[in-house]
Length: 264
Image (cartoon, rainbow, N blue to C red):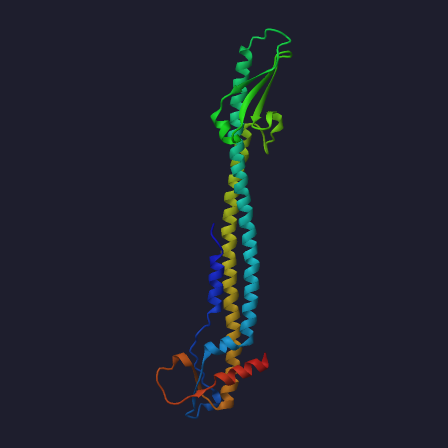
C-alpha cells in the first residue's frame, strides 16, 4: 500500500525556504545614481511570523488529509481480511458439500440390524476440511433406532458438533459464497482506485496551497522591502545569494525583518 509520501514531500518542499533574486528600481531615484542594497531573503522568509503561521496551517491541513487517507486504507484492509475469510468459507463449504454427499452414500449402505442398535459414529476423511478447520475431523452420527443421519464436526476436547452449530457469513452454498467473494473483490479494486484518486487530489490541493501561501508571503515582503528601501535611500536591491562581486552595499535584512514583525 502506498503511503502518504507525496503529501510529506510537499511539506518538505514547503519547509525549504525559497531563494529569489530581487531587483527593485525605485521611481524616486531614477535621476540619481542610487545605492545598491541587499537582503538575505532566506533569513527574512524564515524570520517572518507569517511564514510560521502558514507552515502551522499547512501541517494541520496535511494531518487532516493524512487521516482521511488512513481511514480509506483501513477500510480496504478490512475488506481484504473479509475476502480471506470468505475464501476460507468457500473451501469449507465445498468440503461440507463433499462430506454430506459421502455421508449419504455411507448411510445408504448401512444395514440396520435392530431398532435398538446403539448409535455409531463413522469418521470421514477429508484433507480439504482438515486444512480449514485446524485439527478437526468430520464424522457422521448415525442413530440406528430412528435412522437419522446427522453430519457433524469432531473437535478435540469438545466432541462432535452438528453442522448447524457452525455459522457462515453468507451461505453454506459454495456458489453463493463465491459470488459474494467476487463482489467483494470488485469492491476492493474500486476502493483502491478511489484511494489513488483521493491521494492525487490531495497532492494537488496541498501543492496549490503551498504556492498560494508562498506568493502571499513574498508579496508582503516585497511591499515592505520597497518601503524600507525608500527610507534608506536604496535604488536597487538584490538577494544576498546573488552577489558574486561588488563594492560595499547596504544590508537591509535586519531592518526589513524588524518592519515585518512590527506590522504583523
